Length: 230
Image 1 (cartoon, rainbow, N blue to C red):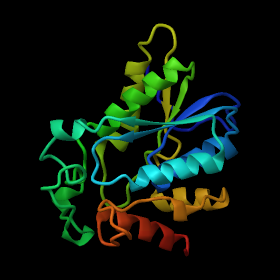
Image 2: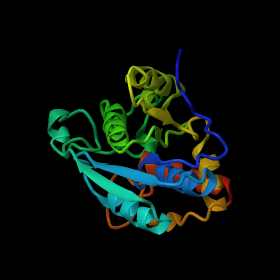
Image 3: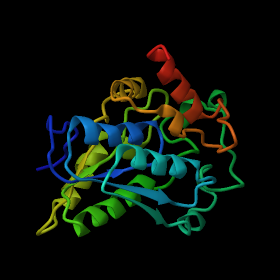
Image 4: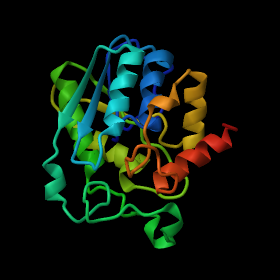
């Protein structure tokens, strides 16, 4: 039987690990676990996987300090980018990040911004971290993309990850994704109610001095805030 959990209890009162990218969804999740679920000890893990910029990791660090968690670790697996060279616009300098307006209906299920098995890799690393410190709850900020989607941000994916993790004979870690059925605007609404400072989050795939405003991630972010009249 699947151990998938995407609706957590109203309160946790126990240690939790949050996979923290520094974007809107994971930052909201960090505040949610700390302020709504009232987890006693919160640990966060961020990953440098060879992405074209590290702005979101700077934001992750800022948010972790702002919330006041027990520990924030940044795992460097940058050589991963060489392994998947040519497959994604997020790590390969020769693959351009498209504008949202350039994406076709064929791109919607797996756009060029998809990173092969990234989330499965991140969750495996985070589960190992959680197990090593005696934590059983691992929070993942997957949400229902409005305009395009990734297979590793679905309920089915989370259920199957948990099926595998449940094979652990002593200290099974459970992945919990409270936002997996929510739109980004619904996530933003939760964050605003929790007082999240979204100025200290980063979304743009291109990583310039200022957000480009035209890449898929920027457009999705702008639409989400517009839907809550921000």
